[in-house]
Amino acid sequence: MATSEYSEATPASADSRLRHEVERLRAENDQLGEALVSHAVVDQAIGVLTVLGQIAPWDGFTVLREVSQHTNTKLSTVAEHVLKHAQGAALPDELLTELRAALARRTTVSQPGT
Image 1 (cartoon, rainbow, N blue to C red):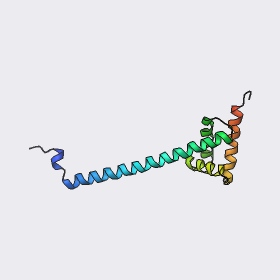
Image 2 (cartoon, helix red, strand yellow; image 1 turned 180 degrees about the horizontal axis):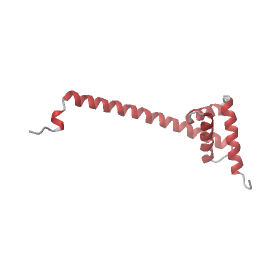
Image 3 (cartoon, rainbow, N blue to C red; image 1 turned 60 degrees about the vertical axis):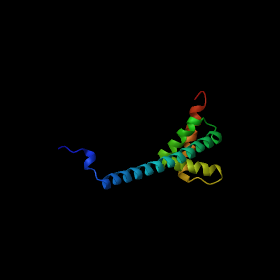
């Protein structure tokens, strides 16, 4: 007589699988929540760069990305520093140097006739 997969599963193993799935979904939910907050911070920093750097929004993201890559700093961390700087905090020297360089590249690219 052939037994099915379901008849071999004990209530304890089914319960264990369900607990594991709930834990996995909770972890995924936490990650999505963190990503949502991080995305909002990046968007706000792009807005700051757009206004203060007088660049287009798509250039604002490029600037953040370049600073992140050149300083080996997470994009969201760079964005947090930009937001704090807009409120009067000092930027770390390495970020300030890279931010100025990235903004200069975007300004040069955006100017007609260059």
